[in-house]
Length: 152
Image (cartoon, rainbow, N blue to C red):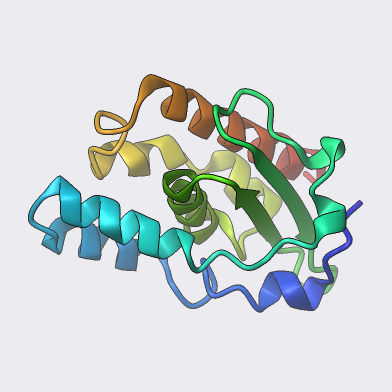
């Protein structure tokens, strides 16, 4: 159960207006990892605010080094899913933003089938984040896929 409204989920530009192709293109354009980390942090600043009531144990993602909460909803008219993720760490917020860009506004089946880790590998990002951040990213993705799978 989420306290955020469908309108709050859909107002998020990550994955609805900003697409994963835009991120991949921008990432290739950036010349060094300092610029790339800055870009990731900037994406994280675009995360919509999660209602405080949704920052609860039921939405807490275990396995992350940082505190991460994740909730999803489905638009009954389109069957598309929308994510909301919150974290207390800047880089994790950026990783969450990329997850949202890749998976927002998709059907549950599309979410389950999409290999988001391949996107992070294409960006060479898994090699440039700490192992604990990588584990947290995997935990986040597993949680998203499990929730989406429950709608299939």
